[in-house]
Image 1 (cartoon, one colour):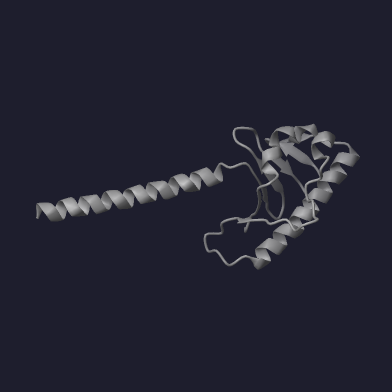
Image 2: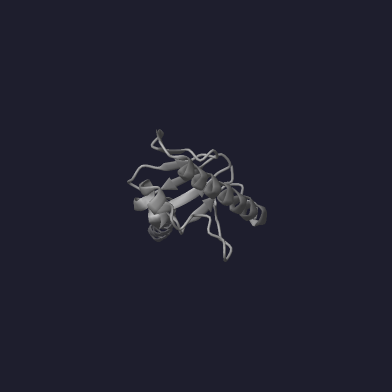
Amino acid sequence: MKKLSLLLFALFCLVATGCDQEYRNHRAERSKPKITVSDGMVTVRRAPAPNIIILPNGHMKIDEIEIPLNEEQQAMLQGMFGQLQVLRQNTLTDAPPDPAKRSVKIQVPEGMQPIPPDLITKIPEFKDYTETFGNLQAARH
């Protein structure tokens, strides 16, 4: 009986360790710098920095505070928003169904640049977020 108890305890420890590792992997993935494209906004995340939100009309918010932009900057963000929305739709159309509604990595087709190369020079608020540019995610909701 003692051997059976020890065996069950050892199995429990293995299962618990596996679950813990899965949770750590999940948390690590969630904390990676990324740009999440949902149907109504684009969110640029890089912990511990505040989130940047881009709206369809080209307006930009940092931590819910709207940042004043000139017409050229707004037009740039509107174009970026539109391209990211097209990529999101294409990605979600091709993605297999997921009942958990996890986001899907967006693969940018060759020759397409949804993030303008001069974004940082035109809108300096993005300079600390460049590491997010290579991790585009399509939100499923």
